[in-house]
Length: 385
Image 1 (tube, rainbow, N blue to C red):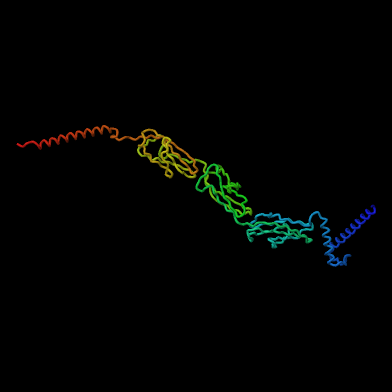
Image 2 (cartoon, helix red, strand yellow):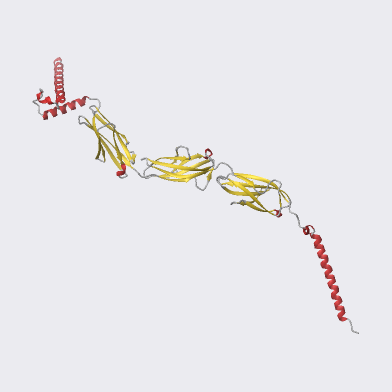
């Protein structure tokens, strides 16, 4: 048993000695393979073919002792399955123990560019390619002619997204909280949507999967009462962007309204025209006229007036209220107290006396007429002398 162990130990030592010697000679050959003294060295009897074989053996042995590969390459931009457009900067991270010689860039197996200096990158103009998937391949070479390959698939997309602003409306004025609603469409996939009103920064909108719409709650009280520029920007996965432009009118204050020709204590009579002065940044939509809290008339167009027939009312005091509405549906009121004083004609206060007098006169005329008729008839029947 001991004899077998000794034999195994001796055989292992012998193999190790042979392996070490071969490695040493291969290393010397590799170092002198390109030198002028190759013919004068003690390896001169070996021809070129033997040198190449020994170098390959050495490379294989050396590389087998390494914990990491002699060369590696990675595409750092763009990423796998990414959507790309316009000009894309393809960046590569390449490393080699003996140094990187160059990096070759391929699009769909076609060599496009060689880069021999750091940083390893290439500007790819995707406009020259169809809107579909494409393969990016890079091959890195070291100074020993080792190589490493990396490949990814990307999707070219240079079609802009479409944006339709559904709310706010151009015809309305808004106050308080306003929900901005936009519909965004893209041939691939929408990445994000942003809103900008006036001087505020771009703010991201929220996507509603059920409605397939983008929303943003806007507090209009943070803005002056006026018209503002509204922009909605959509970005797709490839970075293509489109901006839709609209306007929104914010109005958070009520209108001003006043009587032009009435004040407290004014005496009115007959047909009286009540005239109003009203103003608002978003415009006046209507003015309502009330007498004693009862709506009497509504005027929708300037000049805002109401023809009041005071003869339909008894003489006395009346509270007249005008209520103005602006385009944002804010209201403002003003009130005056006036006196109706219509003077009756003289005949109206003596109506029944006039009626009685006319009746008496009519009766007297009737009696006189009857008497005259009788007298005339009497003369007709009297005998002649």
